[in-house]
Image 1 (cartoon, rainbow, N blue to C red):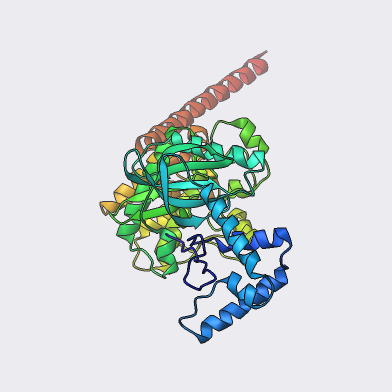
Image 2 (tube, rainbow, N blue to C red):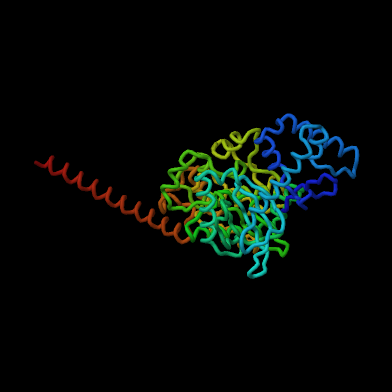
Length: 439
């Protein structure tokens, strides 16, 4: 998971600047250069191209971009030293009392994540720091703090847990459990699909995490391969609550009305439409899309643009190719589960993580899925006009065998009563006719 940070060489080419600084974030230096008007974007790009060419010619090449800019007379040497010094001062501001920063792990759309040590208990943690550019905006600060508070609601073995949050010298931070391992995406990027047994184990763990979140009134809204970590010990952790939402927060929902929030390849149809009443079934859909990708090596819907992909999630005339058709080693039961998870009409999906967990465990025992099988039978019946889909408030497909027997008995009794009433009515009419004639 770690994202290497390119080191910056000093004037002597030893890999450290005069202040002993190393590991600079080059993109921040570029922004500083542009902001101060020391060089244009075109000049920076030209120096980058030159550095790439020189590195290709010499395997031991180690000059930094700043050194190339000095050699190209885009910057002076004194300007380079001053930039390094200022960058060193900026980095010092990221020190948080009680924590010792070890290294940078990666960078996302909202923040930079560092590996650090919590000094009081001597344990390794991860610290997410809101980007400086966003820390000037109250709305982004609010979102960042909200993510920390939402994470604090959760405590589960299959969720990356929150530890602390706060603000130091204008820097907003969020401390969380440090997890070493690869993500599902890392594995897929290496063109390694998951066999059915392993996929079931992982998805079952994520379903348990969603069940916990659901019990706390939360939805994740961004379940995808990149947000599921496979630990070195064999554990599974659902990460990144940046898009998570409290289910019953109507004000929050209305503020996002019409917005397609999620990741195009894994987003649910209701999220694409920007509906405000999103619930746990959206996460079940996204987990289904993730499972599909895991076992087939391809996303459920592809397209040249994000809009084209999202349109396919919504379009009832565009169906996924069953996963067991793409990967013939998969069982038909897995295909049934995926198709139920990814039903475009959420009334036809699993209605809760408990339902999904039940079917996943059935498959682990080499048994046919109970609920997915019922739903497919019910949908087939609806297509043929044989059953009324309004049972149990429109969720007939989720009825148990006993409920369906009870319903059949009710329908039979109703038909007998209607027939009896019709006979009585007919007798009454005939009697009235005879009386009229007799008069």
